[in-house]
Figure 1 (tube, helix red, strand yellow):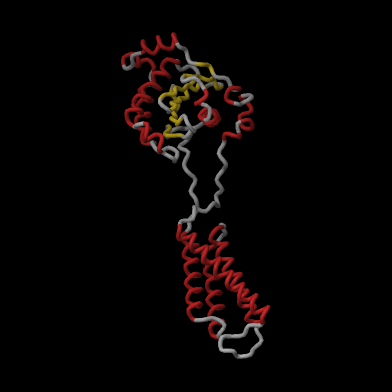
Figure 2 (tube, one colour):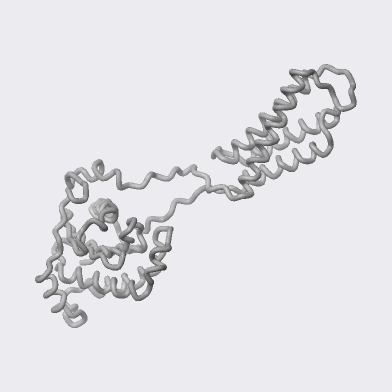
Length: 309
């Protein structure tokens, strides 16, 4: 019987659609690794191929920049498998033009086509009744005249069937960390830069006071040591908020709020003692609050579903 179907783009192996309602046993899961390996090499192979994978057969045809693959049980007739592929190929090419196929960038952009593949798959489950539904004579003649190329594991770059877990690792995508943050938008990037700027300004002010003995804005002679420490602490807090924006940590929002509260206190202390203008106080507070908002709203990167492929 037909187990599942996968459609990929020949140029880069991008999966366009696939069967989604599968009860995956270990053998079928292992076969998916061969599918991924094959999708990377379709451009260098004949346009019609078959490969024997233990108790399964993997058949495919490539046409107009698209590869149509099907996994079948060992005893399933080859002619029926290629009739199935021919049927979904004709429907897919009619449904999606070449420009649209070439323009997609995300996997499974045409997953809605699985509805048609499932209907076709149901039709091909009962081989006894197919003779009244499918014209087998043309496909039988074509396969006799031009039989599919028999692929070997070596042609896929896999040394042996039992070594699939180790020899085909290069075809596996890099696993997505469960703690990966979503990409920064322009607001998050702006907040990050403003935080870095505030941190550098605070650090620079601490260095200037240390080197040149700068005193407060009202020229009141006073030991500047404690103000140097406050400026330095403000620089550290700004850097910490920037860190929270780019690195996942547990309770990041709470940590961001704590850093914001400490920054507001530091800036209020410096403003009260005439080491900071009121405009600078407002600017630093707004940047810190903005950073908390970005820390709070930047979510986790969701792993793209593989649709059992």
